[in-house]
Image 1 (cartoon, rainbow, N blue to C red):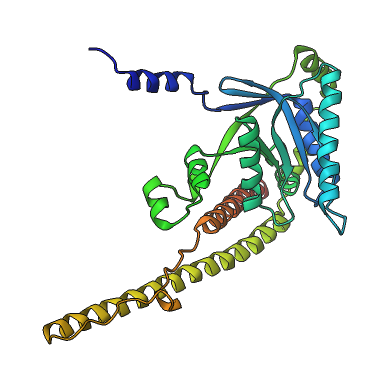
Image 2: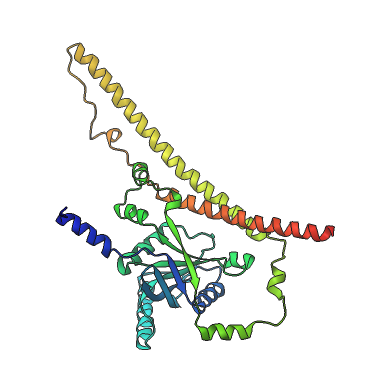
Amino acid sequence: MATSFLQAAASTEKVNAPPALQVVQTEGLVLLKIIKHCKDLSPSLVTGQLLGLDIGTVLEVTNCFPFPNHQQENDINQETDDIGANYQLDMMRCLRDSNADSNVVGWYQSTPPGGCFQSVEFIETFMNYKENIGKCVCIIYAPSRSNIQGGLAGLKALKLSDTFLELYRNGNFSGESLRDKNISWADVFEEITIRVSNSALVSAFMSTLEPDRVTDQSDHDRLQISSKPLLESNVEFLIRCMDDLSTEQKKLKFYFKDVTRQQAWVQERRDENEARKAAGEDPLPEGDSSNPFFKPIPEPSRLESLLITNRIADYCNQIHRVAGHSFSRLSLIKALHDD
């Protein structure tokens, strides 16, 4: 059977489509630089550039550098933005001159004092990277969580889902569009697996740094029973998010209330016009464009509700994880005490 030109073109587009991102492969030195930058300036929000290569389904991060921190300045204006942009260009030029990777593959940032990164500004930043470099990723690091949980628990690589990107480009976050695209709060972000890869020379050097003793201070820190600071902060932020979500729900409630009242008035006028027609009288106008009551009521955007629900889920997962670890430690302590 002969293939039409449109079918051949569609199949060619599918073949030439870039493969989906599945793994973020980064060197250990890059992660150490990210962690040090975020911890040194904690609790301020810090950001930096990720450099590397795009290899099929793998995004390889080989280097990074921090952005200038303007959080403590009172007047963040266009001049400071220009300084930051010139700094990035100068850094990338220097890296290129030294034959280092200078291809931008995304950015990294620490979590703000509120503990969550899900915001409209984060999405706008990601869209800016997406439009300029295509495939990109953001590495999030939470210093407070890593201090309690240890290791690389506070690191995660995120990107926006393709369905959400399409919806965001259209700019329509009504309830009908979310139902048509079958998008919920869990479909906004996608977490990408982080794979740490070191050279053989670095691995051999790290093996020489391993202590001879069986246990060290980090092993004793795992037995700490108290997780009160992290639990209290997560519960506090969770309550704030619930208040924000309640405010968004009230906006929707008022919207549906106004729409119902408008529809009820229009239906009442139509019934009255039917009666007037039956009596041989002229019908009354069903709407007046000059009257604000008859203007279309814009539906509130559901974007903020999706982001707030993401924050709530993040806080709940943190509470569940920390509480689970605490209960395990308490059970261990109780068993040792009984023995």
